[in-house]
Every structure is written in C-alpha cells, then in structure tokens.
View (tube, rainbow, N blue to C red):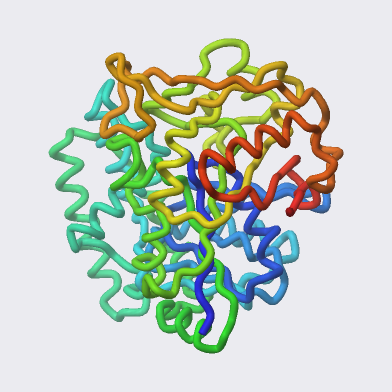
Length: 421
C-alpha cells in the first residue's frame, strides 16, 4: 500500500510551493490540497505563461492527474469560479480532473464582512489578514456553526444559509460595522451553482482507495509552517494547521500513511503582513531582495518583507514536520551579493539559543554567520556540478546544520529552471 508524500512550506509562506508541485507531479497520480483558503497564491510559470492558483491544486497542469480539494480547505465559491474559468480559458478541463470534498467548509459573503470588522476592531493590533473571510470561516468550523460543500446538495440549503447569515449579521451589528453584501451575495449564489458542476465527493474514501490501489498521492499545503495556528508566530498566524500533521486531519489519512515530507524554503526569508520577523532587513539589501525576487503577494500584490535566511526557524520547522528532503527556492535572487548572511542562533536578553522561542519580540537578536557570495548567474546552471564553489558551500552548510539533504534547487521561475540532485 502506497503512502502519501507531503509538500509544504517551512517559512512564512510564499516559498514557491506551486512551482515545485508542478515539477514533482509527473511522479504522482493524485494531488490533494489539505488546508488553507484562497489567500494562498501558488504561482507557476511555463511555456511563456504565468498562472496563479488560489484553491485548486497545482497538479491541475499535468494532464490526467486527479486533483482533490480536501476537507481541511475553506472554499470561496466566487473566487473558485473565477480561478476555474481562467484555467478553462487556457485549455485546462477541470471538470474531468478536479474533485471537491463535501466536508470542505464554505466561505460565505458575511464571512468577508466579519473579517474586515474584526480587523477594524483590533486597531493597531490587527493581524494583517487578506480580508477574504478565511479566519471567520475556520472559527465557524471549530464552533460547529459552519456550512460545508455537502450542504449545497441538501433540500434545505437556503434555510441553512439564511440561519448562518442571520447569526453573522447579529455579530456585525454588535461591532457597529456598516456593510452591503447585496451584489456579493447575488454573485455567491451564482457561483455555488457553478461549484455544483464538479464532483463533490467523500474525499477521505477516495484518497484511501487510491492508496490501496497503489496510486502515488501528493498532499499539497498552503501558507507556511511559521503561520501554523499551533506552532507559528501566534497570534500572527493563519487559521489552520499548515504542518504535515494537518495532512491527516485535512485529508482523512492515517499518520502511518505519511511517506516523504518535502520541505520548501527560500534561500532567504520573506513575510507578508504583520508579525515578528527576526532577520528582516530594513536597508538597501532588503529592498534589493524584494526588487530582484519580485516579492509581492501572488493574490494580494502586497509587498513582502525581506530578510536573511533564519536557520533557527528553519530547523524548528524541519523538526515539527519531520522533513525528509529539502527544496531550496530562489537561490538566483542573491546572484550579485558580495556577502550572504545566515542567522544561526538568537540572542535573547544576552543569552544565545538555537531554539525557536515561545514569543518573538524586540529582545530577540539574530546571531549571523557570513558567507562569500557566489557572484554569478545561477539561472544558467542545469546540474549541481554547474554551481560555483561558494554556492555549494552555502548548501553544504545548510545540510550540515539541519541534517537533511537539499535535493532540489530552483534557479528561476520557469519549471525548466530546476536542478534535481
């Protein structure tokens, strides 16, 4: 019986998971998304075209692969329809390739209003959400008030929706939040009818049947480990479990069915929105990393905060996820830097530690190790032997420190700009 391999991010998201899933999917027959909502944009580039996926698994571009949106995902029918129709126009027939778990929760129009209202109420302590209603949807799920995709098939669906909307509106009135969802609601009802064209399935049975049939399955995560609701930089986190354990609850597979865990990280670090970021750079170097790396949110367009690689956080993420193989992204962004820095420890109140602390605040000071820059265009490299010696030393150091091999190095955005060792 096959096991589920997992691919996920090890930083604060935006590591480039979409491209790597697209590169790896030829090995797999099923690709399943296990958590998150449409705030997570996976960008893929090939054949001179650029695609941004929000909810649909990245295996959709490999013909004949089964793609599943799992029960751990929260789905916005409007954004899903726009995404699916864009892909259909580019020649990808989703109705044959894509299935959706009946147990996935629906983002309602009023969830978006609640997201905005809660953020406004926080004032200067706001989290910096994308405003897409994801947090309130997960809140409803946990409080047993959510609506699920399977509810669309019930004869009393309209009554279920009306009750959920009324409950949200009572909360919005208590927060004195003004809103108008008439147009959004009209669009939403049209979109849920579109959603019903797809196969709505009991995905846990489908995935376990695939494993019993010896089919290779890849579980795809969204966001990153440091945004996990339990193990991330709380409260500046997302609302789901982004770590490998989330595969079990987000897809309905047992822990002993997890195989390889591919951990993706950038050769530097980025973060979108509020929250702690120990290695963040506020100087020209940070600006250059953003400019060269085109560090803007795939969905929101927001500027990403940039900084040096943080090995304390990376080793923590590797431990939490049980990572078996590392994948380095965007090494080419640092082609022209004379010196590359890596945070190998933190200094907190004068004491050095290599453990990721409970609370990251202004007392946390990164301790750096400096490396010679490689000063050449890595995008021209097509094998590990092509890499310059300074870059190989950088990779070797990361492998020694983490105890995990770097098996893939991405040297550009196109699927062909990938070096597999």
